[in-house]
Length: 243
Image (tube, one colour):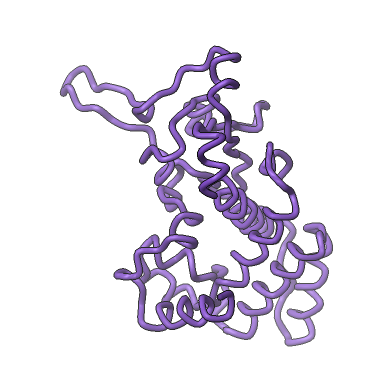
């Protein structure tokens, strides 16, 4: 997750990453699937588990890992100890890694998002640049956004703010006007697309299925009209505690 604190205070981002995870509520997948994309920013689930006790433990361990800087191996060991004590099979390394990476990347990108959208920061650094990990493992669907620069308030970030898939390693960095000019970067206002020359249809590039949204924006500035009554109450309760 290196790089998500580019040009910003690390402690601030880490604090908000923990706050992001603490603001989520464990739900069974059947309940989770009924929520819209904005409401899901407040919810948490793990496929294959229906017990709220187990789901809450997954979430608690992720919160602790973010707060204490624990590794994915420590996370898996703690979860497996909990699961085996209660008669469940241990979570396999691939699934554990997927859960850890995706949720941590979401949390730290959410913390980074809040830092970049601070009024003073946004005024000083009004442009955002999409960056991939830059190696041979970058998904082709994510590579189309590599290096592209858009205004910080451009609607493209409602769709393309990372993570944009499971185990996504992409990030967004903020830039000053002087940096954009010095690097010779072009500020764009339209997401990448291809054209079907037989039909003339414009097909905009999209993130992986289930990731065409910005959980960070939904978390910090949610439109509560789509929330379930339970999640509306959770949001209000969290807001009172943080006030």
